[in-house]
Length: 342
Ligand code: SF4
Image 1 (cartoon, rainbow, N blue to C red):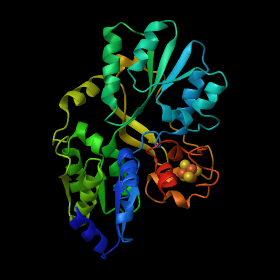
Image 2 (cartoon, helix red, strand yellow):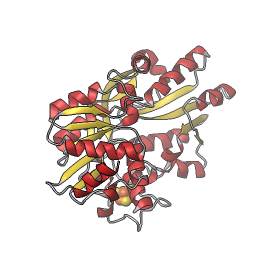
Image 3 (tube, rainbow, N blue to C red):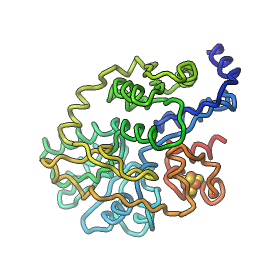
Image 4 (cartoon, helix red, strand yellow):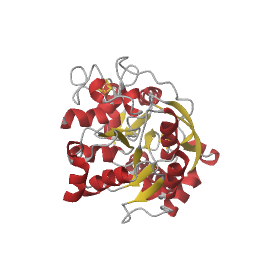
């Protein structure tokens, strides 16, 4: 580890920009002080890997609307509650009489729906490949138990298309720290394909400080070369988790999805298949992306074009206590991490 630290500290070649596209990596890089170990020539930038951050305003507005409908309750992960919609957040709607509940797992909704069969429970189904299998298990259970008053408002996204988009449209990137949790499900082969297509190194790593440092070291060593290196062999195989992939494929199919700051990327989302459309709460067509605060730079930050400190609201009007944008709400967001660790 010391050798790697020394190697990185001594690096004085051409400037290198590496992107991590996993919210947990963003959080762990900050928590482990990895950036402070690097010379100014090596930059780590966060990409669109925080599921809450990439969710568009239209989606939040629809949840707020649903929470105000009779006999309807919106159930959500805690961090989504504070994301500003165009006028209000789910937390605001709850304070104003809307029916909103927080859950730690999508499966929590089964008990709620069973205990009140006349009420419709809508889960705010955000997430990437890692969370999608849990929604598949939820639907399997709902069907097996005959629970019909569950709906999903889906904003599920998949990583390879957005990385492909960043490579083709974003700022210059010299390599990627591939998303660790997502790789467990997809397998490393999807990143090998992206690496070959864009002629860049991709390194798959776990989440402790040693793995993260090893990942940056490997990216520097492999710069200019195409290929995926898997440092997270304890959890990631080439083919991924086939069972989880099959469960997701059974209930969901690819669709175009709207990403905050990017717009619609073809085949980058998942929607319920026609056979399960009865569980959908009206997820399609939620594409509009008006920032709650027009000065918010989440869009530029999510694509690696700017860093949080370049936002005029950072640390003044926008803080973790009073977030103005999604990137300051989630603990996986880069603005939140900058605010807490810098
Ligand atoms: Fe948006 Fe706040 Fe980040 Fe600025 S600091 S980009 S307002 S979330």
